[in-house]
Image 1: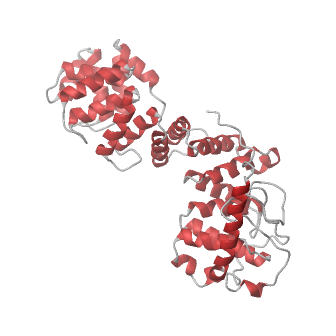
Image 2: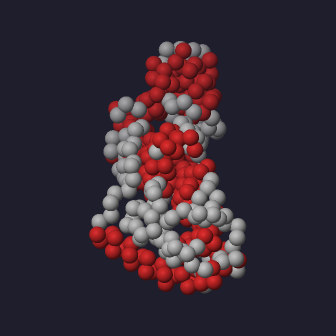
Image 3: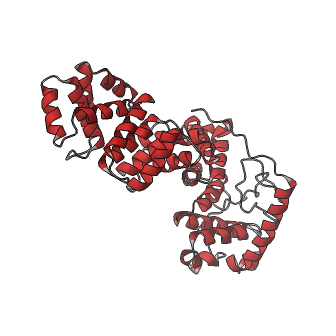
Length: 400
């Protein structure tokens, strides 16, 4: 999926500039609590940074920037964050005691009043501590600092890792900053697989901005671990949920199945039924078929075989092979011990029975353990025996 190219944040409107100015004044008020000992550090040329935003890659500036329009000047010494004598928020343990978000707020308030390298190292250390305590916003700011070597030794790999982590956790500005960095030709040598990273961060940013189909594609890439994405079923479910909230029927269908099968997320059949009904209403065949399975079993909804049959047919009409096969399964044999009967029939050469066993292995239940590999084997056998729908199902099945 090709996401729109990102070349930097838009120019701030006057009202936004006034808001940033207000945040600066708030930062000065927070400074007394965050860095009570900064007066002892000695002053140098002012290093003014935006509070609440991550600056894009660009030349240093010493003037207060509008959102994303500039960044604090680089440390001439490349000071590391290990000298924390000017950082009581760390040395007295208050950042550990505070909520991570509060530690981040203290660091951002202090950033607005930085006067020398030691103070800047303190800001970087506070943000790194908050990031390690799972505050994604802190990871976004800290990653920016490590990319440029402000208050810490420059470490591009570490900085990008922090930005990607923040992006994965839903901080859209981190996605934008990382994408901008990866898209700059001058940074290519410092950025492993810059093209893949750029595509990933741009796609995730597009999802976070509310484009449902982008969220669905991001979810699939996380689900299967393709391209620059690690295999992460939990993040896949999160992306599907964002896509479903944005109105993408495929994302709702994928989320519903994940919830029904506890695939990357805690099992929640009642919620699964709700999002699957939404997918079905929007015309997504697999959503209808999966909701039919829940109705057939009485899982998250009252058991209703007639409704299940109707949902399977709706899914089939919408082009979902899964629904077609399930409808035939209900018509063929509604009794118990279906697995034993159909495996025997498959051994006698019944292509449809082989496909039915494949469906049982895919869904689990009825005394059968869910097993995708075995499901594929049975469907392949059905295809070899002439069941065209099994062949279509195999072709449409994403490679895992």
